[in-house]
Length: 301
Image (cartoon, rainbow, N blue to C red; front, side, top):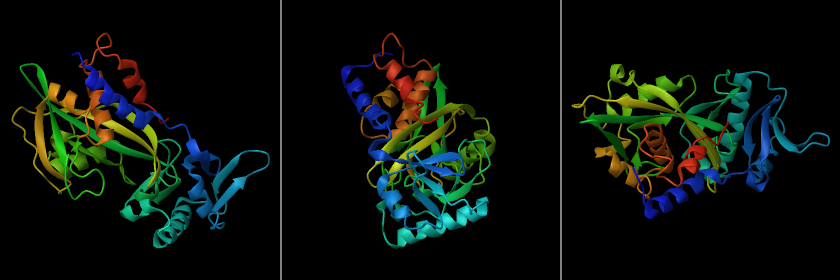
């Protein structure tokens, strides 16, 4: 499946967003004990230094400056409550625009995905602290005479982020207490009314990860667990919780062209590109950006 110059130009723009982050602006490592969990922009570190009972900001000895959670906070509930108080104060003061997106939804903070959580943090605050956010995304597709067609969602115009753009069939962040597949099954039902028994047949295929700076939010670091689900030929998703306004079933050529434009939520375009690579729908001998695409999929350890 060959692509043209216009497609490559659009894809280069997309990849630039996800591959340009190299800890710019002097971001400070965030540590809980000796565990590195985040990257804090300087402006955020300055605000956190005003809460020494929770955060220690500065250098220890000859080493570089760090942000460290106060060692007196020794349990997950203690840490979570203390950080929540600080974040609520910052939100009330309107210190950072990203906190206006407060969701009352907690994410787990840990240095590795399989570890027990060190604390829980409000979702809207995770980029301020440069924490890795985890999500689950579903590629839903159907085969017609051996040719793949992909189900896509159009985000609601009332969404606070990326309203009206194309999205994967179902997707969502992994909230505290949930796993990747649990989240995927939950989002399938909530967003597209995919029955749990069908969603449970989805196959985990790996992950897509990336990091970038957002002027309003902070340092966005995300790891998306990707699932593929071949749905029955007669299956049609329906709008569930209102986060989606419409669904489309497109031939893969149309999907491939769409990811190079501006109609896709950027990280969802990456998930689709990952699907195209894994299913041999982009070929190394015909796609000049093949290696760049492969390497762009895995930016966050």
